[in-house]
Amino acid sequence: MRVLLVGAGGVGGAVTRIAARRPFFEAMVVADYDLARAEAAVAALGGDGRFRAERVDASDEAAVAALLERHACDVLLNATDPRFVMPLFRAARTAGATYVDMAMSLSRPHPQRPYEECGVKLGDAQFEQAAEWEKAGVLALVGMGVEPGLSDVFARHAADELFDEIEEIGVRDGANLTVDGYDFAPSFNIWTTIEECLNPPVVYEDGRGWFTTEPFSEPEVFDFPEGIGPVECVNVEHEEVLLMPRWVDARRVTFKYGLGEEFVRTLRTLRLLGLDRTEPVTVPSAAGPVEVSPRDVVAACLPDPATLGERMHGKTCAGTWVRGVKDGKPREVYLYHVVDNQWSMTEYGSQAVVWQTAVNPVVALELLATGAWSGAGVLGPEAFPARPFLDLLTAYGSPWGMREQ
Image (cartoon, rainbow, N blue to C red):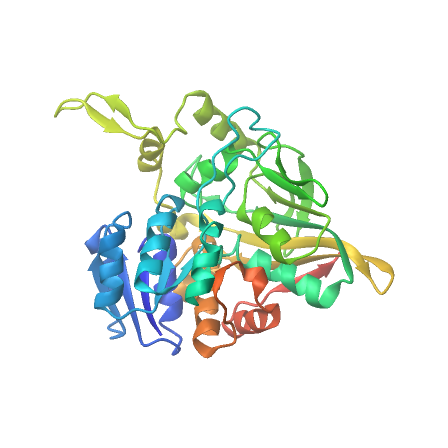
């Protein structure tokens, strides 16, 4: 397997450090718009000859396709933010390469009823091309991070081994992470965080299909394991709700994120001021008027999440709560994966949230390389058997857990 990794930020850098310990691939080209960042990610690996750095603009489909062909890469792993999903997705298809991402194509709210009906859903642009990918015999594995990704694997595992009927699947994400010296320092890409938290959340119900609600709706307190404890969670737009019903039978699917009151208040303020917008505005500068995206300005004003590890303390938990019936009796479980920041920093030099996101696509690549997973078309993690993934994740030294509720 020869991999083109596009994006050498926090998650991309963690991908290289995790992959460097595994023998399943022949080469990994680490490409970024900032060549110095790609070179730093490769240099940190201590001379592993399988890795090399390149510069590429993720929005330039032709350049990405040419890079895939020049290095004879048969897989493109997308570690950029969701703005670049479609150009990278199309570039992989042009080159005939397997495509893997951790977030799906962007949504657009319904123009008249944004908090009732879906407009363009997450992943719609990719699924529209599913028949073409399937006919060509090429795989696009979409949503293969931690959430979406591991959470979807948990849903498939629950359907295959733990339940006869599933009433509800609810992804629940929470943490007790703190960052020294910052009152507000998101542990993940703020561009993506704004996108998913301020868009209308999507809910799935059997018989009704997908519909939307107000941002931060249906608050509930969820008790997270391994000392994290109770965290208030709210509805947030996320890919799992769009993926799981395609392959797993469940009467209801939700995604709720443990944001906390201060985080929600900050996001509401950004929206009130129009600082969540992606459309450029004209601002004065020493060189004359320039056009900038307000959301990019917010991102530039905040610390890079990849650099926060030394100041960060606590744990992050990603998991899937499932309620249903097994052997005629009600059952409720929470399948989860917890990463302690102290462990991930000591072991890999990566903060917990980006490391937890990065490990899952590497596990998936190894399963594809060995043939344990295979397929064609545009497929989510639920389309593949869960047990090989969960066993290999444990073999990577990061076991998952299950709690009967």
